[in-house]
Length: 254
Image (cartoon, rainbow, N blue to C red; front, side, top):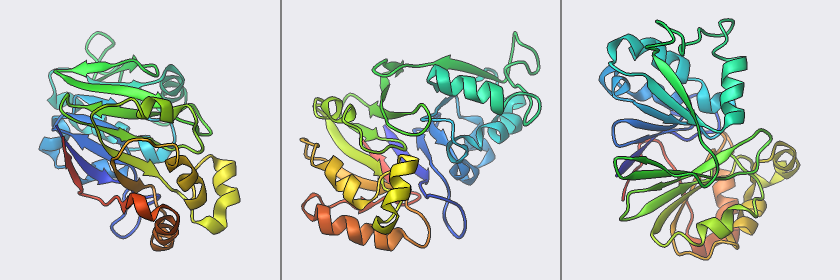
């Protein structure tokens, strides 16, 4: 499997795009502004979109993707998420007020888009590529994802804060190679991180102490203007783990 980072920033501007990852050529994990970096042919290949949660920076390009290539495709794009997240998409986005309901265009029998609910621990097997929702702790219902090729695997935590439910699962993944985990705020904004259920360096380092596997660690969701500071703070408290900053266009093969 090949996973390419299309966007991993805490916002836009300059070279920053919000969260989206392309798995092989046909799977997206989240659909932030990073999706806009794909060509038309690449967009047309997307069959599956796995969403961690309903916040705009993770879903904003689903409407544009489906609107752009839906009529070019022979089957609908499938959006996978928890039932709570799918309900939010139906009610607040694909509701004919903000955007058309593409589960009914051109008609309900042959739509451009369809939904599929997933639950924590439920494996979705796409031709041997196993994607499993993991526990997350955010201000809206959220999950992370385990992406497993069979040979090795990657965990993406999604947006989360202190999350005791995650680590017993992660620590049992025998072939785990990569961990992508967020740190949305620098240390001086710890109170904001706590209120918004994100991580800052001290909270992140406390979480990483629960990790029992030896893996490569990458930090995502860093905010412009604070990214370098946040990474320096993380390096101080987690130096032995050698956490690295996730960058757009990073590629993971496993």
